[in-house]
Length: 191
Image (tube, rainbow, N blue to C red):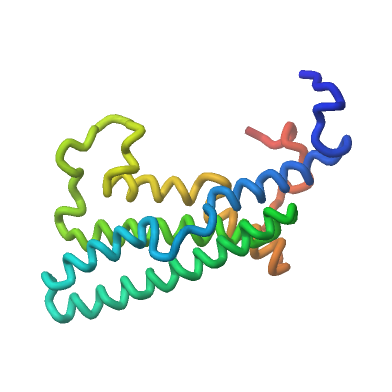
């Protein structure tokens, strides 16, 4: 495919920088913007906690209170980190905050939706009545749909494992993973 030079992003040979900038902006977008305090999945957990806490034994109540409180605090940290990442991206300088935000948001979403399912008890393992057993655009409106979708958040825009490697190597300056084929062109790698 040939593309006219006027449609090219960046200079010739500058594709890697353009790709990385695009990915960093994608990660900021995937992490989401600064949402209002207590919104999203943490809001659902808080509402469920308000209903279920009186139904728990005293020991379960203490354990769940600590778990819910820790998730609330983490949600606030992620919300404020997302606000900072969004501000950096608006200034045209997406930095490592986007990668941190993407990783933190995806992992938090996974933990909060798991807590919601856990707090439901045995009912948390079931699909809601009328749940369509086919792919539907309304899947995010159900508890199980959000639980399952949260796992996808840890894959899109770079898996959580890849994000940890990027942050470790490029931000913290840690040594990279051993890559025996890092200097071998893709076409020469045995398949």
